[in-house]
Image: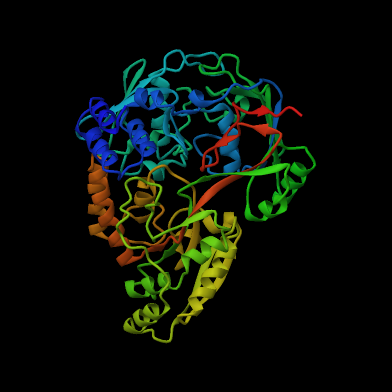
Length: 547
């Protein structure tokens, strides 16, 4: 088929919104894979699947059997899909729980418990058709009642839901409605063209649970996933067996064994001793297996980032010239190559990672400029610099990143003192007034991957955002955010995004100097290990390499 014939065929698939994306593909502005991802976003799931997207369609034949052994950190509290936030708990949930949609880092949105979805003309009502005949592990069939109850639970302020910040201003109680047993509608608080991401694995709490779920998940881990609970031992680990009644392709491994570790170094020792097949990855652990042919590093590019917030309502950062000056001291390419060993891409102080098709690539990239930083400081009345404390968490590469920022800032006369806290102390109660994260003048916070920038834009920068550590309150920004949410096609989204990106570069309420890759370390004895950049660990297609 010629390119022109292909374009003509694509145009016949849907309406005007799809055709704008087809136009961008025809002009070379959009890659084919991004076009197919967009097809899934607007509900053309059948077309996306026909083009070879999706794990089940591309998995090669492999021998079944065996036990996959996984090392994870310690869950921070009881494992409950409604309240979890830590990577270890998400990894455990991945074995038994499922979402309406899976956000695959390679192929985009993939149907799981939802077969298809579509929006009305306003993008305020989204309708999802459910996959028929899916059963929970206890044998009950999943219906629209379970789906609606799952989301009503997540948006209930009294449920302890960790997803409240994601749904704030997007979906409220009563917004999820039963149409029939296999159809659910969502009436949103405001138009949102990216809403399918909000019911996907991107909101890791959005696991579909029985309508009568009572918060006792650890008793039976009752989900719909490819594995079922065998044993669970708090603080020690869990094991799962193949679910014989799974709605999709049955899992290849017989079992999954997960062991919890207090120390990451102990994980790599166990991996090297042949006691584990898969562990999380950190820079320190990667050095331990570097050059060893028995292990390999598996990575996906992500929108994960370590955001540096600057309190816009407190001196010295009330003046945007001071905020811009600090941002200009950073050498982003050096950070990517040095601190992150090249496994990241440079950021431009907005949540619009380059991997997002809606990002406007024409917005100039901010680069290190010490002379301009000093000029801005002088113009702001602090020509001799100033002292400020940077408060952050002792996690991942963040303490090292804090030192890098400290050293770069010295070049412009900014004296940064470091206050590195244990992770739980840094987050505190995660509410304004009782959280070093949300209350500090200057801080660094890690944010996990999302398939769209919406959650970052709303939660961290909107005037009413529950993660707004910068205390940034800008009516122009809030209005642009509404315009972005209403944009129905990629071209309109990119125009709105460009305006947001330009405003944030000018105001600089936060510094985002890089977007990281997300990695796992695996033994070369296993193949088919899949994962998302938000800590889901998908092991149903794992097979063992024969010696």
